[in-house]
Length: 266
Image (cartoon, rainbow, N blue to C red; front, top):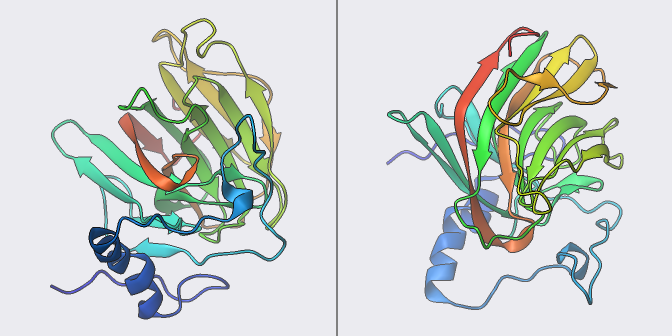
């Protein structure tokens, strides 16, 4: 079987098939032979009563591992930041559902680790989906995300609408490559009120990026003010997931995914 083509070299994108072997398919074989957990940097461990997660050391990066093969409406998929356990994704044509399996310490700070299903686009964009987590016991800060991203580098400029395991949603941005993420958090529900968004969306209208939401099935509507972020064209648009656990894979399911190359569609 011929392996899928590897992403062409970019500033920090995979430049040798050997890396794919070691961190991709080769990782599955290694785990089959050994139960020793992969090494995880102290800074990447999730927050707890005895530990605080902190930003990665300056200059820390891992190159992306990309598969250039269509999956549903998307052109390809990438392990952005290449977590120590490889991710995967599938698409069910009958249900039109996307299932993403991913480890990854976070989508935050100055770099990210998550599985990303993407397509390249220009101009205005509307993207919406229903997001759910099959495992009710997953880490509370896991993130299902809708993303507009400048590149596949782990520290790329981006805008993210995220839904956390608790139900909290946010609109986050990294406004320069290598910059620190910042966000607007909306804690309207989650575990406190047992209310979670029925549907989330992200919309790009020129340089204005807005979060869209439907709580109970009402029409999608903006929630809070937009941010301003200028992307060079083309850019990457898609869905992704991060377990928020550096070496443990969890799952998110995206249903009723809608993507339009225009604003004001949802």
